[in-house]
Image (cartoon, rainbow, N blue to C red; front, side, top):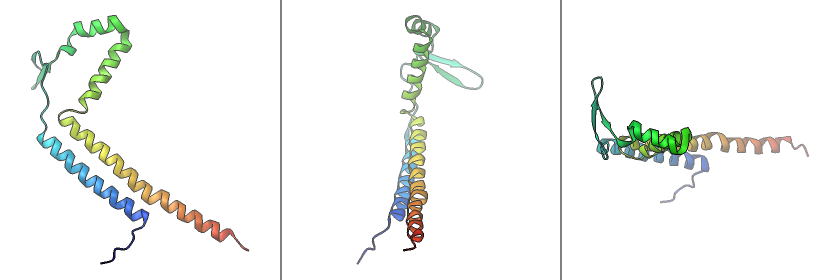
Length: 132
């Protein structure tokens, strides 16, 4: 059986489809099996129709000490660090994997449909401009 050589455009489209399928299936599996981690919880606080975990980082003393030693920038850096670390745990990891998968697949589709067709059209224009 002879395989035809596929052009770059088809190859990039197939790669994008494979990455999209594998990434979204993986994100779904992660979301289904992941549990939100409740480590370092001091207790729970009941809000309007839901219960929230209390962590040591949420206390006013912790925030005051952060601001005392490093100023407002230290408090903002700690909030950013906690947000970024939270992206890689539990159910939020599934959303992170899904977003990264969609971004990579869309960039491959863009490259396949715009950049390569632009190169081919430039070659045709260069050849048609010659009137030797």
